[in-house]
Every structure is written in C-alpha cells, then in structure tokens.
Amino acid sequence: MELDLQKIRNDINNVDDNIISLYKKRLSLCDMVAEYKRNSGKAVLDSSREDSIIKRLTEGLNENDSYAVSGLYKRIFEISRSRQYEKIASPDPFFYELMQKSLNAAPFPKKAAVACQGVDGAYSSIACKILFEEPSALYFESFESVFKGVTSGLCQYGILPFENSIYGSVSEVYEMLSRFEGYVVRSVKLPIHHALLAKNGTSFSDINEICSHRQAIGQCSKFLGENKKIKVTVCENTAAAARMVAESERHDIAAVCSETCAEKYGLSVLKKDLQNSSVNYTMFYCISKEPEIYPEITKSAFMFNIKNQAGSLENVLSRFSAAGINLTKIESRPIPGKDFEFMFYAEADISGLDEKNCLLFSQLKKELDFFKFIGAYREITVD
Image (cartoon, rainbow, N blue to C red; front, top):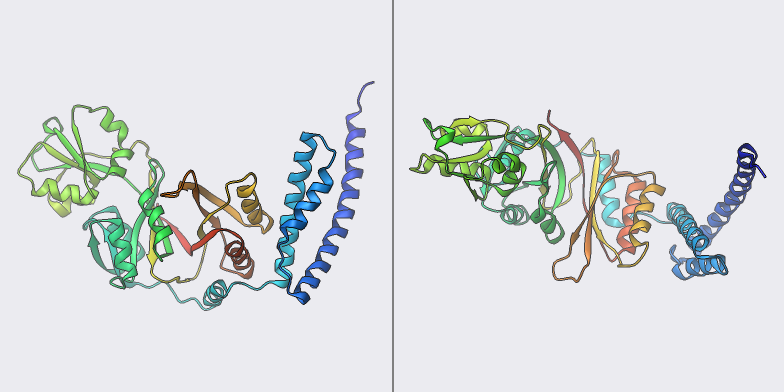
C-alpha cells in the first residue's frame, strides 16, 4: 500500500493538537501544585516523584521508546519546575542584592589601581588602557599574583587573559577563578598582532633564539615551525621578552610581542603579523574582589560541577533553554585531585541582570553540588 505523506502529516497535526490541549491542562495542574507548595513550604524539586512518573510511563516499552519518553518527560519536568520557581521562589539573597545593584548601577570607573601580569607594553597593559582612561597599573610576575593583588585589596581591579581564538583557553586563569573570590566586572576582546622584535641593526638571518610567552608561541606556531633551527624560549610575558632582548648584549635574539614594544624598548620590527590567522583575538577579563554591577550588561559567567551520571549536564543546559537564555560557551576542565571529575565553565548572553536570571542562578546554586557565579558584565570588542 502506497503511503500518503500529506495524510500522515495531517494525522500528526491532529495528535499535536491533542497533545497541546492536554499539555496546557498539565501546566495548569502544575500551577496548582506550585500554589500548594507555596502554602505548605514544600520544596519545588521532588526527585522521587519525577522518577516514579518516568518509571510508570516507560514500563513495558522497548528500549528506544523508553529512552524517548524518558527524555521528553525530563524536559517537561524542567519546564514545570521553572514555572513553579517563578511563582513561589525568590532570588537567593546574594543574587537579590546584585539585582538591586543593577537597578541603580553607576558608570564604570575611569580611574583605578589595576593589577596586570608582566610589564608595561604587554597585551594585558594594552587591555587595561582600553578599559580605563587613567589607570594606575601595577605589574606582577604571575596570574596568581594578579588575583592576590586584587583579593588582598592592593588593587581595585585586575586584568587577566582568559581565552585566545587560535590557541584556546588560559588554563591557569580557569583554575584560579574556581579558587579565588574574584568576580568579572568587564571583558574586552582585543585583536592580537604579533611582531618579531630585535635590537637595531639586527636582521632576521642573525636570529638564533626567539623568546615569548607560551600563548604567543602557540599562536605563532606556523611561523616557528617554518624556522625550526631557531631556538624557542618561553618567558613569563611577551613584553618581558622584549625587555629582556633590549637589555641583552646579544644580537642574535628576538622577541615575539606587540609592535608597541618596539618604541617602548628601543627595538626594531623584523617581521609583522606572525600569528597563524589574521583573525586572532584574546579575551581579557577585568576582575574585582567583590561582585560589581555596571550598566549595559551583555554577558554572565559561572562555574559548576555535576554528578557523573547520564543526563546530568543535559538537565542543567535545558534549564537555560527553558528560561530563554542563550548559552554562548561551555567548557569542561578537570578538577585537580579528583578522578575523572570535571568543572564546567559557561557564559550566557543576557540583557541586564533581571529576576529571571537571578531565579535561575539561585536554583542552580541550591541544587548543584557546586555553583559559582563569576559575574554579569559588558563585553567590549576592539576592532
């Protein structure tokens, strides 16, 4: 018998209409449950109830149908819980305070004491000067020292590279965000153009050694791979590499760094745009000791971990979808000292810090094994 596709689709439409009618009734009943829980003080999440529903509905089904029904109802439960939270819950005090701050947010400061890694001329210092009109920059040897400079109160803010479009994430900063009580208050996406700098009068054929930070080395791997006879030495910072070349007595050594370091350290530019791709950006975070909220918020960031079981990550991600929040990034990082356990870092697009966002963050903080809000901030892109 030949199948009639249009008839099948019409039958599906009829089934969908019935499903929507019944689903609306289910949502209405869930709203009544929310009212009961508000009056009784009962928790929104009732895992045993959800498990028993799935067990009842999948009993006797084959494996494929059982998986499909289970996935469908987990999604239904997420939506139902979100509706119940909106009706009966209030934001956690931490998020409620942030929400109130966002209503009367002051402009981002023009002047501040700012901790940067490296020395003047480093990309962190360039990012600092973009974010602040009149920064008082203090330079530190390591990323951890920048964190400590901020958390100790020595500096109001700190600038840290977080991710590069070619070479990926800066692992140390991920790890420190989970350990230190720091918060992101601004971010800037800075175009990175690496140059090869050496002493005046030096030609490229004279160079036997190139120095730079490992991120810059990774971003220029094609150029370095084409010149394998040249020794590559890792330094703590690109600008520090330029300064080292300037202070050295050698004329066979060069630095991969920003072109601005040439004038600052009296060096010559041997080559420009060494990076693997012309599209090369590094995201820098501006951190503070306490959470600060400023106008024109476009991003939020947070970290969390979950139980190592099927569906755990999906359950978290679906919460954002149910709330209409677009996740723009999620990355897993191994937890030091844990056996195959991972911390997840995520970013989301938001337009302000409203009650919907704060309710969701409050729910996740309450339900997950670990949830850390990192910040709500404006992301700035430099062309």
